[in-house]
Length: 136
Length: 64
Image (cartoon, rainbow over all chains, first blue to last red; front, side, top):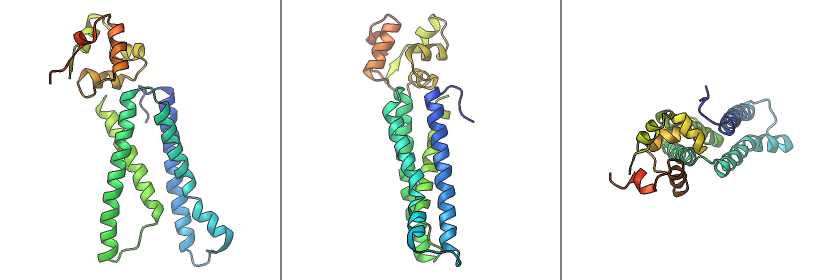
């Protein structure tokens, strides 16, 4: 799945990014389902812990991204990563606008706030993959 | 910006991967510079000039 052209540092960083994205998505889905379940407690310390839980892998991802950008010596790859993160932000904004329209006018279920984080991370990773593939 | 990187590399029988290794960058970077998709920074341009033992202006030209 990962390109053999990438350095050990790049491969390791990509693997860590992927793991933290997956973790963010899984924890978001778990906590979202937990709070929607009628028999689960949604008050007290447990509720606070569960509410904070999805932000932890996302904060980890931000840390990994900043560390990667700071340490990446290959300027072309660094530029592609920054471009992909920007594109991920734009796609997330577009998704937010479209989803808000559906929420307001079609009365569909509101998305959990962390879903936007998932959209950002997944969109950024796909954008990066496309950039690196086009430079093959 | 145009460059003679592909020609200079071919004269030495180096693959993109060989050049990337000498420059300590990825093969994608070499490919992006050769195809004009990416303009290198000054430090990388100087590194290329030293490696090919040529002045920067003989490798890169500012014509589109």
